[in-house]
Amino acid sequence: MATPAAAPAAENPYGLMQALQEGGIIAWTTFIILVIMSIGTFYILFTKLMQQQKIISQGNKVRASFWNSPNLKDAATKLEAKSAYRSIVDDALLAQDQHGKLTDPIDQHDWMGNSLARSQGAIGARLGEGLAFLATVGSTAPFIGLFGTVIGIYRALIKIGAAGQASIDAVAGPVGEALIMTALGLVVAVPAVLAYNWLIRRNKSIMEDLAAFTNDIHGYIMSNGAVKPRLGGVGSPVKGGAETRSPAAPTPRGSEPLRPGQTPTGAQATPTTADRV
Image (cartoon, rainbow, N blue to C red; front, top):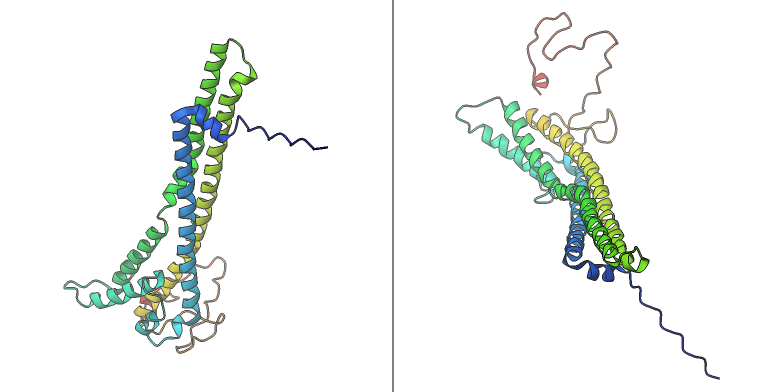
């Protein structure tokens, strides 16, 4: 005896495509805007993560071998071209060369500090590109979805008024459309907010490392290579360079620390190279 074939599953009359078809051009426009926002969010997220990871990897190479070189020009060859750390070194060398060509020279310390600050600021600006889009998506996507919700509720009320009664068949489609638009707005907004906060935190960590490297470059140039960052632990000598000084002892509570260029008795001392650095 033949078994009768199972009846095909009925198609869901209240799915996403049905809701968009019932909503017309307004529902489709809202849906397309949210899809574009979502695609842009994940595109920026992945591209910024790759950009950040490249800078982090470059920082690891700097800590591993950069300061073992005899001079900055040789050390720069160990860095990737067009990388953030290479850009800082190149700008420092350029600023050092340009200082001697000034017709009205300023203090080399100030000139080098301003040049390195501009270089570091340019890198920070590149790291921040695209984050404004994530912030915009995170703040506006729920309201775009809410707009679709309002339109869906409005259409449901029109159907109720036309039918004269609030039957489930009359309002299920428009109300389902409204809820779908609300959910889409949240689905787009939440990843954008999470991505924005995560990238901002990573950018802050990267900029802190770049600031420390910039300060090391500044001190190295101003001391003609005598000052290098410590490698391999506190108080250990730098390979290929002079031993660095141990950190200063903490100032006793209640006593005022000495200002640079001042003796313990308050008299003005002759500034040294280390004071100017």
